[in-house]
Structure formats: structure tokens, C-alpha cells
Picture 1: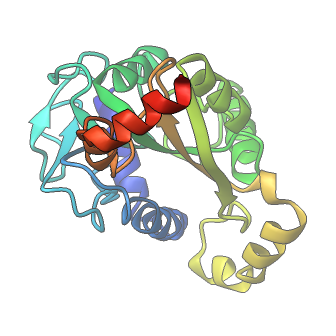
Picture 2: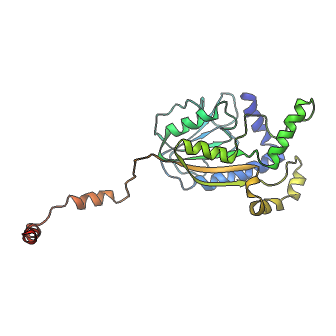
Picture 3: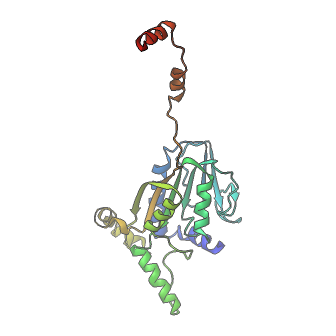
Length: 255
């Protein structure tokens, strides 16, 4: 596990890694800016500051092992977070699930610690993309004894629709989802710049084949209804005294 995470951090320093990181950082900045509450947590990927634009008073970065890069507040097993149930308002997971040894358990733990109507923000590499196909081909070549991987060697890539199914089974409601990073799987920064036009073309013509997906989901609790902001005024009106004249008038009408 340690090698997988270090591999991801090193890969973020390569031209395709910087390209991916810039897109993901922009998505996180936009997604979390207007999510309010008191406690927010980022799991993994210290290279991405997923809570940079969020204004909650308590924000933490958690990493799976000590000795890793990043200004982590705690090191913990993502499948056993040291938080009580219904205690966090926001959890962001930049590549945490695909690098986890048990992504199901990690996502269940996120659901446990989130408050009702809390939000989870997930980004992951898309296996149904040019980058994903090159990675699968590289794995085949390595089994034959040659070649090297394009992406960091980690856990299993989790497809976008599969991720939505997992969220739905845990009673999350997907609020938004999108894809990005459409340039081909090349290592050269010059070639990435030459293919800049493919980002706009990909969003229009082949949107689901981006190298990375980004999902925002809300934790729903069945049978619970959040009170509106004016619930105190409504309660006051319901318990307000009724004048005697009003009561007498009502009694006359019933007679």
C-alpha cells in the first residue's frame, strides 16, 4: 500500500500527472466552496488540496500511513475512521477508493461518519478512457516481460457507473457527476499541449471517455425531514394564544 501511494505522489510530478492534478484541483475548488458545516475531512492524495476553498472551521487531511508526504492531521485506516457516527459534514476522496485495499469498507465508513444531508466528493480514474486502455495494455505487456505502466500501480480502477451503484446502495443520492481530461495518454508535455483542443472536443463529443470522473453525492436518511429555517416562527404561531372574542365567535358558528 505504501508503494502505491508514493507512486501516486511521484506521478503527480510528471507532465500527465500535473495535467490531471490541475483539472482535479479546479473541480474540488468549485465543488466544496459552498458546502457549509463545521467538520470536513480529506482522505488521501496529499497532492490534491480538496478542502482549499471550503470555509468550515475544522478541516483535516487523513493519510493511511505515517511517513508520507503532506501535512496530515492524522494517520488512520480508512475503513475504521476515528470519528463518531454522524459527526462530519463533508468528506472528500481524491483517488482514495481506487488505492484502498477494501474500497467497499472505506465507502461504508464514510457513510457512517457523515451527518444526514452531508456530502461526499469523489474523483477516480476512468477505466473506460484512453488512459485506462493504455494502462490495461501496459499490464498485459508486463505479464509478457516488458513495458512499463503509464499510470501509478495501485488498486483496482472503479468505473463511474459502478461507483454510482455503490453510492446508491448506501443511500447516497448523486448530486452531480462529470468527466474530464481528454488528451491522449502521452508522457511528453509538448504533445499534451499540442492536444489541448481535445479537452473542449471531448466534453462535447465523447464526454464519458474522460480519463477521470468527479462525483458529488448527498447522504439521504429515509423517514427524516429537515426543518426549514423558519421552524421556530411556525412553532410560535401554532402555540400563540387565541383571544376570547375569537373563541366565542367560533363557538357561535358551531351552534
